Image 1 (cartoon, chains in turn orange, blue):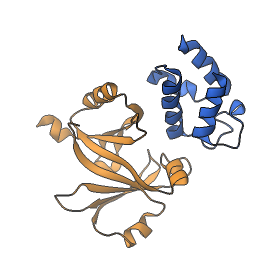
Image 2 (cartoon, one colour; image 1 turned 120 degrees about the vertical axis):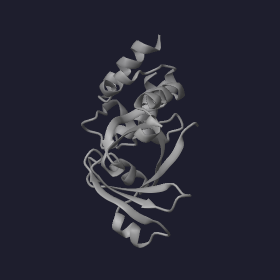
Image 3 (spheres, chains in turn red, purple; image 1 turned 45 degrees about the vertical axis):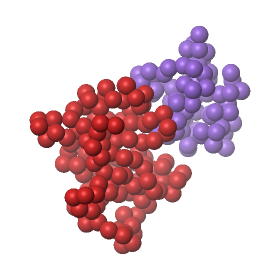
Length: 136
Length: 74
């Protein structure tokens, strides 16, 4: 894997209840994401730790509603940084990863483009296209 | 082939609906993620490669899945 880990996605039934009982982290973003039909909260744990993304589906049509219903929430995906959509699409092709959806703009991530894929091991993987990385 | 398909559908979608009657309209379990689970299982079970452009049309019903697999197995 040539990509840097950006965040860990966790699906929760109720963000506020989760935050009340959290072990660590400071809320840096708290938005409604219309594409996912979910409330998204980012928890920052400091420079040495990846961000935690909390995802609360807001209706049955939310992209994570089925996951919450079947599994009761919990670990959902890893998100990595990529330099371009093309780089992600080529990686998906090489690795046999099926595209779930994207590229779409993610309001919780400064409207950067994200793509979600599904690996042959039935794992959800997300990529955020980091424009700073692209121009570096 | 249909027995294998029915078994896959029952395992993945786990609906109360008999596999041979299932469709996206009557199944509460056939969401986007389970659709990908079904596609991966079809590829592995029947040795076929399903291109991304076919994903949405496969999210349909049992009869269409049977027809698609038969067309792509040879």
